[in-house]
Amino acid sequence: MNLKQILDWRYSTKSFDPNKKISDADFEQIKNLLQMSPSSTNLQPWHFIVAQTHEGKQRVAKGTAGFFHFNEAKVMNASAAVVFCAKTDLNDDYMQLLLEQEAKDGRFPNPDVKKGMYNTRNLFANIHKYDLKDLQHWLEKQVYLNIGNFLLGVASLGIDAVPMEGLDMKAIDEEFGLREKGFTAITVVSLGYRTEADFNDPNKTPKSRFPQEEIITVI
Figure 1 (cartoon, one colour):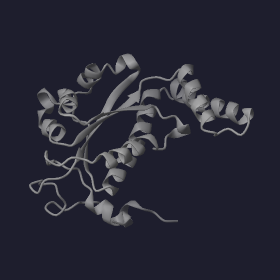
Figure 2 (cartoon, rainbow, N blue to C red):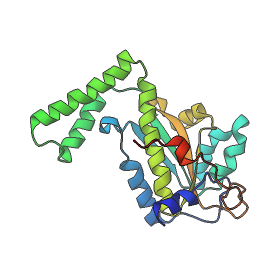
Figure 3 (cartoon, helix red, strand yellow):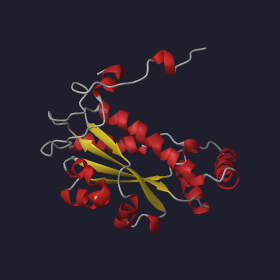
């Protein structure tokens, strides 16, 4: 499929076939998508929980109890559910860890470039922490960049997905001890393959978007 075909094909899948499973080869591609997403200053303020087993999905589905029960089947019938987690703070230990990984990967031709990256990254982090006072929101924005990249990427593999904010994120945080580890869950994306009965399939419920001339200004 070309890009337009992929965009037309993908949609927020509401009904997953529990008998269809994602292959190991495709899961390797999925992990690459999670790892290689862009982020501001290459900050990578995220962690991902990939639930493939029935038991793993049951743990994620604890976030669908009560008011959010309507999303339980989207977790349990999917081939997998990915919990997208954002860091809740930044400290120098993390900044140094990130810097050393970049050095190991050969990003710095000399010590001055390495020092410049450290200073620049901290400059932007401090703007959001002290001046704009929106550090948590900024960190979550980076994870949403990953989610957008992820949705298009899995669609290119012929894998259906649905992103869900309609879950009890506190329950998921508690289930996986995320806050103690410096993270919080912000979204769950279920992955798998659509059923023929899915009412939201574009063949049954056509997609609706504003015309390009209304949303795009070319100058």
